[in-house]
Amino acid sequence: MYLEYYAGIDVGGTNLKFGVFSGEGNLIEKWSVPTDFGNGGKNMWQQIHREIARHLSVKALKGIGIGIPGPVLENGYVEVCVNLNLRNFNPVTILRTYFSDAGDIKIAAANDANVAALGEQWKGSGQGYRSIGMVTLGTGVGGAVIIDGKLRYGANGLAGEIGHIRLNPEETELCTCGGRGCVDQIASATGIVRYAEKKLKDNNGNSILRTKGCLTAKTVIDAAKQGDRIAEDIVRYCMKYLAKALAAVVYVADPEAFIIGGGVSEAGDYLIKILQEQFEPYITLSGNRPPILKASLGNLAGIYGAARLVLN
Amino acid sequence: MYLEYYAGIDVGGTNLKFGVFSGEGNLIEKWSVPTDFGNGGKNMWQQIHREIARHLSVKALKGIGIGIPGPVLENGYVEVCVNLNLRNFNPVTILRTYFSDAGDIKIAAANDANVAALGEQWKGSGQGYRSIGMVTLGTGVGGAVIIDGKLRYGANGLAGEIGHIRLNPEETELCTCGGRGCVDQIASATGIVRYAEKKLKDNNGNSILRTKGCLTAKTVIDAAKQGDRIAEDIVRYCMKYLAKALAAVVYVADPEAFIIGGGVSEAGDYLIKILQEQFEPYITLSGNRPPILKASLGNLAGIYGAARLVLN
Image (tube, rainbow over all chains, first blue to last red; front, top):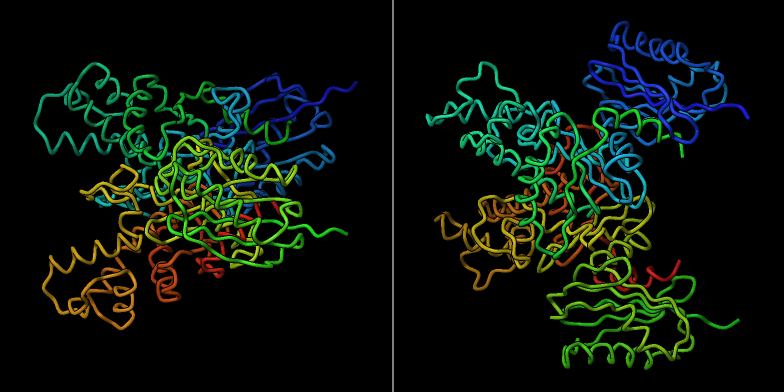
């Protein structure tokens, strides 16, 4: 029997993460390299081929799955990817050209939060659930929906873009998407810091946060965990908007469970508990509420899920 | 060849609507009777059997589909149906008992807005679309999502309950669902009238509406169509919330098209145009926007869709 391998690639604004999996779905090797943005994207595709070829015989490769930080259609087409500064491209057809030496292999692409959701469903907190709402709390708020066992892309690649539900009519600044009042602007790491700075300015109560030089979402959440009242209010306020967004997801797709991933979710049970408390009262049409679970694969979810796109 | 028939039943708070369909999906006969609520629901089930038996030989029946005004699980279970004042029942198992004389037939149930969506996809405005967001604007705001060709029920029967997305943080009154700030409270016929009454009280500008004895959603929309400024503001305000809800549906399920049905949608192109204008700016992550279409089956959508549950 010949050995068969599958590659999962997670394209990020900073790093390219790679995972090589066996046909049985075991992670054999993983590594990452800084993303090379040069030459209008060409360097990155060359880099991907070079990195994989450096770790295994391309002839043994049976499939490549890739996660892209932006909306992706089911056929792979990407209209715009702000983080990579690329427009109108299809990673599936591009990779097929770069990997012509690999023969007729499976290639598939999806949004980065979508692959994280697939990864968590396959090997993480989502095991056993057929329908999942995933939220990644990082620099922005990403999201994904898996409904009845299948990752949903949507007609224009927007399914699961939970971060851009508009819930804050009082917002005065623009979101990176060009909209205003998105959940992304308040529940992301950036949003938490921005709201914290505003709250500290509008208020002259005592807070450990005033002694910190440069605020991060982690400093704010850590202060809240230690009982700092202003920090607690900030976390509760930001999570209220995420809770409203989760309720909107229930009233559209009604998943069996939510999974919260991304850097901010490292705050763990404390954050999940606040989110759960704020979420529950919004669900009034049923006595049942989906559990809100912390993601368990950390930043490996992307390579697992990307591989899962081509590995059943 | 024996003739085979399928029944589609649309259970409403006022009437039971019936349709008998051929195996080819043609509507052969339709009628309606006032719903008999007596005897803890028993009268209604008897009524359904009696009405169908009055129109055809139950032996020729191959399937019964039923639409229920409340959340329904995929197996038919209904936790609570406020309009019928019934709890914890399963129309599928109940109908199986009442139609034991029909032999082993297909029986299925779904929410009333869900069956309307199926009906519109099968024989109405939704033909040719595999993914649809449906909204019914009546006494309340109902909704449904069909994703990748399949009606989605959700884990707790809440998929597509678009009317209960919370979008108005300034709302002071409770929604029928027990929540506060639901789209239902502002974009339903009831919501439009309520907001119009408030707006006329808070404002002393001229308006034809002041000459009307009893306001209805139709009076308000008709006045807006005739250029009454206050009425225009009211319709625009109420539709803004529905537009926000549709944008939330895009950022969760991203359907190919929206279909607007229910009594209020009879206002036609005028209302659809206002909704479309308000909706478009909310979609920022893609240049494409799903069309918003008026439902075309009117109040027959329910019997068509109910039959479609059991007729492929």
